[in-house]
Amino acid sequence: MNEKKTLLYVDDEPINLKLFALNFKNKFNVLTAESGAEGYELLKKNPQTSVVISDMKMPGMNGIEFIRLAKKDFPEISYFILTGFDITEEIADALNERLIHKYFRKPFNMKEIESSILEILN
Figure (cartoon, rainbow, N blue to C red):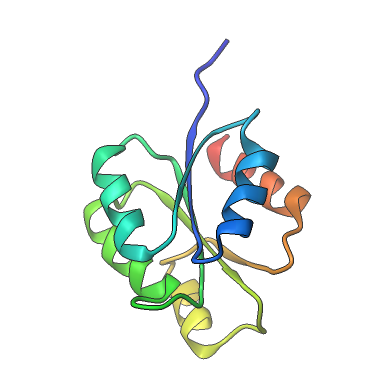
């Protein structure tokens, strides 16, 4: 059996972190963080992480700012953004410059997220 890939999910809503972890814990090794800063620290401790999914709107640093920071040090990770809103210019720019692979709308569509992750990992 191959080892589970590590997935980091960053969101300032604890309930979303729980839901996400519950949904994916059988398929992935799920790490969760409540802020971009915490997410960044977790990446430093878990450089083998394959995928990062971040909420867009968070206090302190938003999802794109966090991903921009993380990608400098961890360029081989695949990044995704989650947003409760329509696509913004910032998200569009991040897609165009290939900072992120794609964005997901909230509420989560677990199937869409899972298939996008598997697509990247295979």
